[in-house]
Image (cartoon, rainbow, N blue to C red; front, side, top):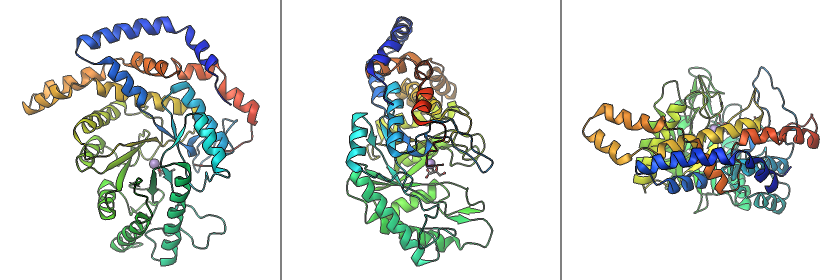
Length: 426
Ligand code: LRH
Ligand code: MN
């Protein structure tokens, strides 16, 4: 399925007048407050988020999985679905593949398809948390940390193979997330497991091309429920420092224990020049992989405040990889991803309205109330007309969710693919 430009301009017709009214009103107000509205709108339009190839079908848990039908059953169809998201939102201009769930059969055809939809290949993800059919060694007791040299070698080779696949697609980063850990006290020697992981990552690092990044993703628990080798930002940072200047930490918002101050973690990782990227989602309890901004929108705003500050003040930190990592148990996957893209844009737009100089001055004067007023003044601004303008400027729709429904895209996908297709992934 491909969304035609005419469908988009036809859909926008009815909403243009009220959009122009609310945009002009907001732009006048923000301009009077000293904001450069044109620059904010172009920053929003340039902000592209990679869609996880493993989240284009219904997710599930051990208790069940409920399909939405019309799911993509091939990498080509997954790229097409990312194309639909990008056509509507103009902010989903990349896809993050997971190997072996998404090994291309025809690299040129896939690159051509993606290029035709203005989709780039972001980080590729290795998978040493599942055993592949006919695999010689098992990852039951870990992969890069495993006590068995043979298992570690198999996992290292898999990561080098993933780099090779990414290279052929034009990707510039490898994301390593390890489920390695233990379920019971005494099961692992923590030092041996960490040292094995460090040595294995250094072997993988030797295969990381000079213009690539190695992104080390941490997570406190699941699927292991007593210890996880790369459990938190500290472990990830230590391993990235051990590997070298191309290695960075990857922050998955759902990979933090309750009440963690993620914005402080983000701030310090940028200060140290070791923040490599994000997996955006939201959560109430654990790694719930819920819609971005659906549970803690203010926390997301505070994270973007630190990102905006870091992007202005930390040249030592590289450009970040922006990716969503979500799972859809009760929502149409494409609608869920559209809502996540909107929430990310909204948090970024509100953070761009923070007067960082005024905030820094109030912080220096310990004017606590003024600090909060500056933050919450920005947060309480309805920035949706700015998001609409950014989409319009790039040929997108005013309201992606309403357009998705008005154009009956899920209905069209079901007609095209039927009701029995299942997407690979989680
Ligand atoms: C682990 C994780 C990781 C992916 C997987 C699909 O919880 O966040 O980023 O490999 O989800
Ligand atoms: Mn993740």
